[in-house]
Image (cartoon, rainbow, N blue to C red; front, side, top):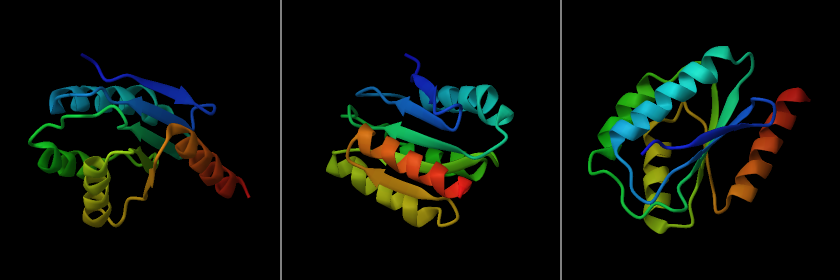
Length: 127
């Protein structure tokens, strides 16, 4: 099943909504679509909100494959904001923060908080 994403804030924010369980093949397919449909056309940084609220099962190889995907990140990517009330996913997000110090990450408890953070980041770029 494809992982859905939507473009918000005039193309400056991508909201990715992960299902309860997913495969890394689905993540790779979604990432390719985001790169092709959004990031390749972006003229400014695009912030990503990854909503992990519904996730109950993560792929066993998520960390190693995520590391490979992060190394090939496109230049238009802004801050990656993880949304998770789940402690396990919160710890995973913290691990990514430590592994990729050059990438900006944030962690929020709700999508509403993440959207406010994205608005704040965009406002900082404008001023």
